[in-house]
Every structure is written in C-alpha cells, then in structure tokens.
Length: 334
Image 1: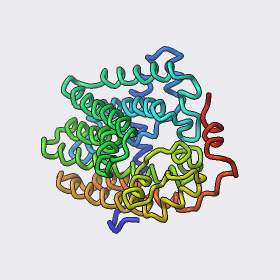
Image 2: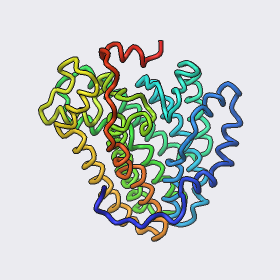
Image 3: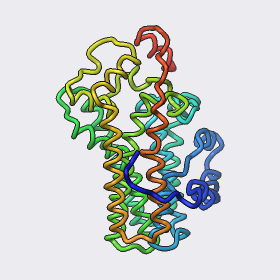
Image 4: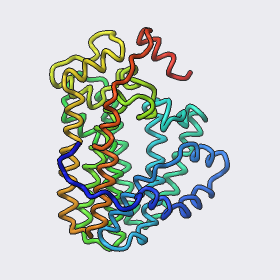
C-alpha cells in the first residue's frame, strides 16, 4: 500500500504489550465494583494504544519504565471508546453489541467515568496534565462536530481538524508520555508526539474507509452503518468537496457507497493515510530512536493504518432491498 520499505517486526508487539501491562491493567479493573467491571470487560482491548507508549519508550531507552503510563493510556482509550459509542449511537464494536446497547446508557457512562479515574490514578501530576489536555481536545472535537452537523458550509479542512481532535490526541499523548517516561528529551518527546498524531489521523481515514467498504467481518460494525445514518465521515466529506452531493437523494446505502467511490472519496482517504504514514516516519527518524524499536513502532503504525486498506478491498454485498428509513430502524435499538 505504501512505497516505504519496512522490516517486519521480529515479535508480535501487541502480544508483547499485553504481557507488559496485563498485571497492572487487571489490578486496576479488579478494583471496580462488579457491575462496573462487567461493562468494562465487555470489550477486550486491543492494546495498540499501550503498545505505542511502550514502543515509544523503547525507542528512547527502557520500555519497562513506561508500563505505568501505558496502562493509563489503555484505560483512557477504553474510556474514550465507551463515550464514542454513546455519542454516535454505534450499535456494535469489535463484532459485539456496544456496551450501551448491552447494559444501557447509565452503566456505560459510569464505566467510562470509572476508567478515566483509574487512568489518572496511574499518573504523576505532570502526566495527568498532559493526558487531561488530550481528553479536552477530544471533547472539543465532539462539540465542533455537533456544531458542524447543523451547517452546510463546512469545508474539508474543518472536518480534518475535528477528526484530528477526536482521533489523534490520545495516540499522540501515548507516544509523548512513553518517550518522557523513558527519559527522552523534550525534542524527542515532541517528535514522537507528532508521530502519534499522524498515526491517529491516518487510522481515522482507514477506519472510515472500512466502515463503508469493509463489511461487518472487517470493521465489526453493521454494513453501511455510517451511510444508513447519513454521517459525514471522511470519504463522504471528500466526495462532497469534489462536487458530489452524496446525501442529496434517498438512494440505497450500496448506491451511496458507489457514488462516493466514483467521486474519489475512497481513493483520497487511502492516499491521505499513506501521506500521513510517511510524515510520521520522518518524525520518528528525527527522534533519534534505537533501530529495532523504531522498526517495530513503524511496523505497528503501518499495520493499524495502510495495511488494513487491503482488507476492505473486497466489494461488500448490497444490502437487502428495503428503504433507508426501514434499514435505520432495524439497526438501531429502541
């Protein structure tokens, strides 16, 4: 997918990350009341956020010095996912019903609040301030998104700004705190923060592509869920910026997907993911990392971004013949 040559990581970095933080993560979760812990354990974390923190630390020095911040960032990421599903009313995540669908809004909110309290409890005061700034950026992204939904004059730059605020700040924070915990300089931490920022936005481009063309097997969400709910995701916004009014008619979702692809929305997102990955590599190199750790960190970045585009290349089947409104009703719980 990308023209950058990458040496395959010599170890499974996600399994390594999980092994590193499994004990402190489980200890943190075990401190929760049973009903709250049940919600938290409903979705298994993929440990990619903690892996970014640990590998960023490994680029600078000793990864074990970042176990505490990696655990905190994994908890914070789970907190953000619970809130994201609530805000978007996403009915599934990772091939399972979303937590709010399974347990209700109140329990999902309480679990999210508990997770962020656990995350802050892992950190020093300066680290809390960095994580808190990242979370405030996420909240600001949601506020801006709500405001933009009521406007027709929003350009693609504004959407990219919101996407970055919502989806890049935690990955950037993970890389920054990982570097600092290992004794990195301010310059090294800044470069690794920029690396994480680019990776987060690249991942968002790929997530939005998969949500339309990947199907439930790849994305873990109902087929065409974003189109059924008329969401302005990045492929949609790109197609609109190229002159295609995607949601101008009551076309079926598979017809909307074809319209977006024909307008160039899918290709643009995939190209942007590649460009962001290349920019991230430049920041990684400027941080002066250790070679093996840098190879592993970039390998992970590629795996969660551009490498996933190929999995969405198989054409998804058309939805059964029914109106869009009926489709929405069937897929959204009461």
